[in-house]
Image 1 (cartoon, rainbow, N blue to C red):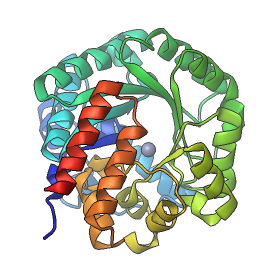
Image 2: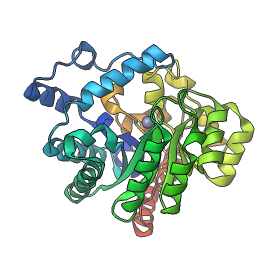
Image 3: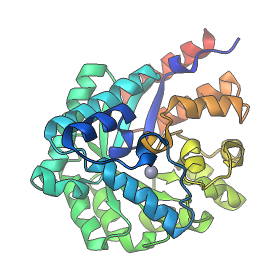
Image 4: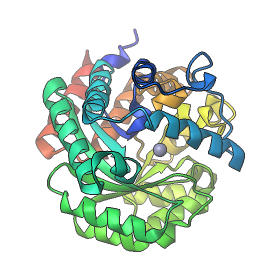
Length: 337
Ligand SMILES: [Zn+2]
């Protein structure tokens, strides 16, 4: 008998702010605010994307910007985070680290600091309402100037003991080398934040290695292409650097041809810690649970292995020690049931 995966306690460590929005909420807010949505976000949703070329990535970003444009009022932000936390709870997730780039909303909410405070307050309230721990990762954008990233890192550092737990780097890996952002990551790490840059999604193992060597990555967003290098996988395993693997994002963006091409099994077997994530359910049509279902149905993970994946997600998280202990005990109970 297969144990129900929605009852398996887990952590979700790779989820973007706008990308976490429920599709139904996007439709509703767009209607309310008179925002015209392209077919790809309405009847043809979820969109077919081929982000492996520049044009495809541009289209992905454009859809993302349209979705972001419906978040206009503070109440929209509170709603988005609360609904995300509710969806986490429904899928058995007990700890969420949500990634936000405040510069995408700063003009709307009165500045970078105000935007971050709004996101943190929304996270706090969502946590109380749902029982899911919600923490915030501030993410800089690789396609912008490294000085912008430094500004964000300093801001994130100021909120290090007020709900911000990590510092990330997102957007097109092919534009902007990781090492150009090393100063920003030094600021973040000095403040005790986890370094969680994206790498090894659109580019290969060398890009993952750069995140580790130049940015001091504690986790790598995606990192799946580390599987192209046995030596790199060995290093990740030795140093317990987690890959936040988002299989259905890789498929949705055309990074992998199909789910069977995502090297989850290879990474797991090499001892690389893994935290499954959804990345942008709004654009890929799947939240966290389907990633675990895929691990079972496509990669052949047994219940014991699925429990280990869940444990790895918790161990890789910033959840406080008592919370981790409690969740790990509940994972063991799930497996023993
Ligand atoms: Zn991502």
